[in-house]
Length: 86
Image (cartoon, rainbow, N blue to C red; front, side, top):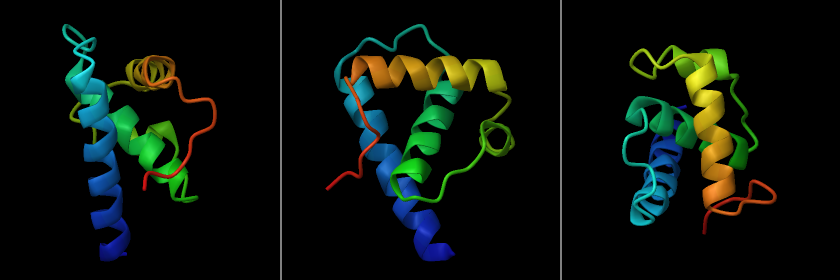
């Protein structure tokens, strides 16, 4: 399980960096952005977690905020299919 968490953390950071590189997430709830990045990373690893589970570790971000952030990230990164990072 520890290996999974390290991998998810690395993938979450990679996705977050891509979002930050575009500088379009300014003014958005960063906890929700990070939660959405974690959600996407888990899906990429075929170990999906619910938004409710992500909320429990997202420093107060709501399901609605994380859901919106997820859609925002998918749109910004032009993710058609959530694929695994290399």
